[in-house]
Length: 391
Image 1 (cartoon, helix red, strand yellow):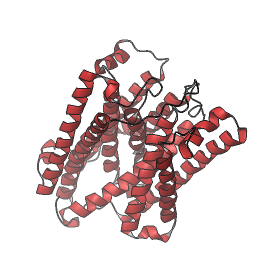
Image 2 (cartoon, one colour):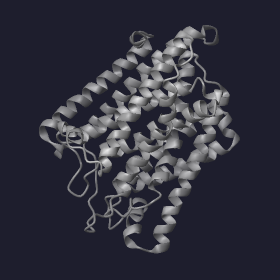
Image 3 (cartoon, rainbow, N blue to C red):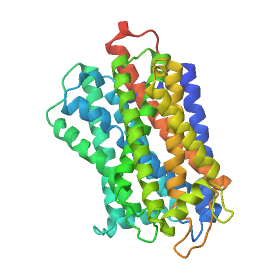
């Protein structure tokens, strides 16, 4: 089936070429970083995690969101997600690849990642994060490929794959839970020191991932004619809406706890993010943009306006951006202000760092596009009467 990813329309080929150019630029920037060192990034002694780790954190949630399709379809026999579930699994694969790549580019010496295998330390959260991420990648790759191959042949999946599918459900929850523990287990960082970090991560994941998937499914439908059905989209919208509301509720719980307690260590970061602290306010415009976009998106999703396709896509897009800002910038970068010594060191990513980040995202979308092209080709071959044109 791999050969299906190598053929397609001129638009598809141009898109893949564009992504390859971005991957090349990102690779060149990374080679520059590898030889020069992490001084090419905006990270410092006080801000040891920057854009790379913040994107890793956000994308783990996008990967975990596949469970919102896998669980109803396989565990509860919810056939409405039958066509969409494979797209969700392949989105998870591309997201995990990006997660692992962001970890590698964040290391000054990437070969040191082998130390996790050569010298395993089960008492380290990082060790378990490596286990769950790679395990989730393998599970989705096996389940996705087997499901697609059986669809191509018109046969039922083999019995041996069912236990792997069931295992992938709690595994999806574990990848973002363990990632949350990386933050919640740092006592010197008061902004992250909260028992609700894992539920908050999962809530935002179950909103951002399906929101992106809805956009991707509409793109697939417009360019290929492959339609997962209105009922499936409606259910995804419901999942996105409730998850976004729960995420806002969790954030408000953090705000109440911090300000009602009046403990400066808990309030300082929130003040920095939304009002600025001692003249430092780099993230203030981003955080208020996140709030405005998030409220606007939920308002649209809760009203009949979502029945309009363009408004729905707009709502999903701004919600995704809102959550990306909140989790991919505010939560990670804001947690370093102030430092345990009460110093304020703001972080600003440098150009080389941005190019590497774009390259990693291009790699993810290249893999996703190839997997979706294979999937679409199989579905077109099996149901030619139901589609209008090939992409």
